[in-house]
Length: 285
Image (cartoon, rainbow, N blue to C red; front, side, top):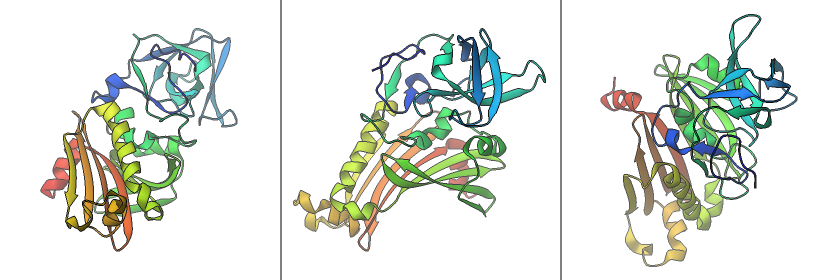
């Protein structure tokens, strides 16, 4: 295992999150990094083959934009160009910089080796970035979506990602050009009926590491016919007899995890919603 330059506990491979930020505080723009290599490249994406955004000399300062690493070794940062004086954003390797802010506790929520693509990162988009990130800035980082819709004043961008090693449809919702909700829909969970509850419990456990125990933690039996046969609970979910739900509240967001089913299918969904938008949606504004 490796000690990360941003002071904290050692973490295994996987996405890492600063617990102070993820417990509900808005991630500030005053988290500074300094280049410690002779030169350091800032790339458009977390990949050495990605287009070059800029090259910085030793001693240059940057702002940390995100509370998570990408692919374990890249920080998402911004800096002001010495030539154009324009602020640019991109990715810089962890080994090229050091943190200048006080040590933060770092938590590994990858569950060991973790999935190769993204971990649980999309769940925390409203936590990792400033709430209300602009759609244009989002697209510069994430690239063009696989699907776009405009529904009742909302722009919906759809992507396919790997979460916990499983295919997942991820939707980002923008209202008036600002990010207000992230939705995760795990695909083909019905193929693993017997494992669906375990997957749900793993997700809930990882979320609890960050946000504490859920405010609501519900197991709801619509039909108790299978209640005393635990080997049949996955089947009970697929028939709509059994539903699981967990809810967390932070100062800025509401996180909702749900496992349900009907007609021999199982649905595992996770939403992270900005509270002001949630309130307006509930009122029908």
